[in-house]
Picture 1 (cartoon, rainbow, N blue to C red):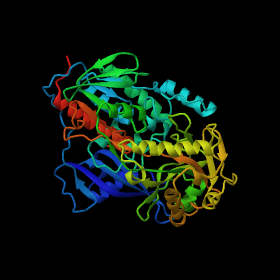
Picture 2: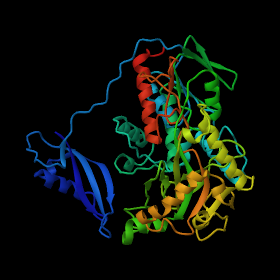
Picture 3: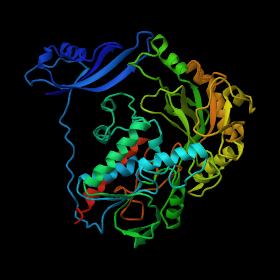
Picture 4: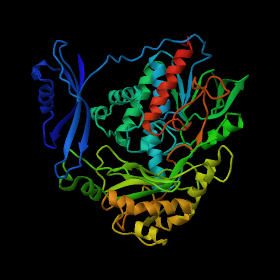
Length: 528
């Protein structure tokens, strides 16, 4: 009999071996009668300081003859074997093509390869080993490669992030995503921690290993290969033209192009692919000393190795808009993330150790089609560009990011640096960030500060540092798709992941990629 037992408690220094004894006590049996014991979830209960505790759920097996007590912490697990996919009958003309190697594209390609479909995957940027050097050069010199940067290249935008694996979706495929990440080199703890993260250093290795496995299974991954046109015939995709002057002929194409592929969005729109405007959020990166966040969250237990660097999640519902923290990076840095010249875009990144001096998070406000000033389906892109270019100008038009103390931001003055030093990967310049964002966004941000400070003591510190601007929180467009996950009106074209408007983070994008791959398997016969 398979069981899950929850609410097993350990002190910060308690040995994990004691969990099996606790589970046995709850079951009323000897611990020797428990087999296949496994931790499935670990979370931190910091509600009562300093008595912070670790809370676990475990899975195990016991003999069917045992009488299981009626305890809401004990649940019998039904047999949840992974669904066996049966190939469809529609012929694939050529091989399935996946455009993009972010989480959606990689997992779509992996599942197709695991089922014998030998996908071709194209990526406009470089493989991750080369990409890291190109991004570093941009950070050090300000010289931007518009095809390989923080947004484009193997692994997608998530490669230069904290590698967070939290998600709000409830889908059986989430477990596969975590298991595959672990199989390809991520720490085992991602399979059970309540707030798992890989770290950008580990994520680079994982992505490379996934690509090698796809190749071993018969797939092909082509780098520096960009989709510049699509071929359509009678409402059906029939090929993709690349920047290498070649055409990949196929009737099954997955669009996993990411949320910043603006030129590809335009090309697709010009070819008749339908788009819709989609809301997203914009704002800044805010930095605090990591020690301040640790103390606010953990009190006297701050610094205990079982806790690590503390994070936070803040939310304030205003009048018609929401202000919130997003993509919080404990012990991380703020990274230059532009994909177009003449613009400044910020994002956050942490390594697995999360041991840098500052904590940073996006502090953003919701915006939507009513703010874009146009009904054009790509209007959200131009809205993003406007503020990115104003940030570039505020930074001195030399690729420096505008930064500002929180106190100065609240008082609409450029000011000076204080005790929190910028971690930004490029140059910075003190400027008034109020000039780089719409007033309704900055007003909502200002209204949120006191509220957030009550929730997280010290959040409103005068020297907290803002860096502008954060505009790429999610895709500004959605490509409508039907019940078969195909683009409305174009058979065989599968919009996928965050760029197409169907995901919001690494795990949900990967899940969408798996979902699309499963649909292709059910529809098409295995290529000869």
